[in-house]
Length: 156
Image 1 (cartoon, rainbow, N blue to C red):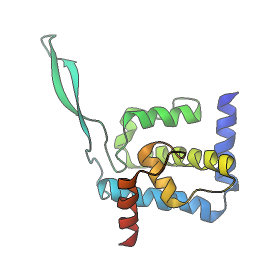
Image 2 (image 1 turned 120 degrees about the vertical axis):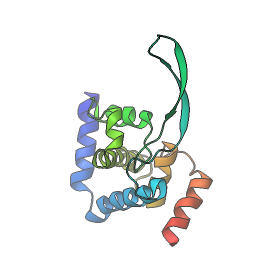
Image 3 (image 1 turned 45 degrees about the vertical axis):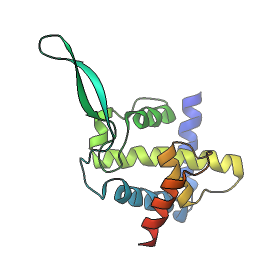
């Protein structure tokens, strides 16, 4: 039932949103692409250490990118998009596909719009949506550093 409700909410937003509201998500995604990677496909962002077995079966530590591609998507965002959809639609490998990255962002941001609208009775600003991409939550106070980064980008 949860899957049906989530999918219905997403479909309702995408169908009944005014063109300007739907365009707003696309504009935010376009801006995020430039802010996160300057539009560069296969961009590598944050790195972390992971343990893997080498050919001898010994554990070795490797550097591994957490955030990748045009939208600097972390694996947790793939999981979140799949949770929103109620089924596994995206894989971690999809982060390296600019079209799939945009789809992940659209699912996440449409969900954020729906949550915000239900709570406050209005559509969130583009700035709030962009900050929700960075923080993961539409309800949290907008992160100051990202707020400045996005605002500076829009002024260019």
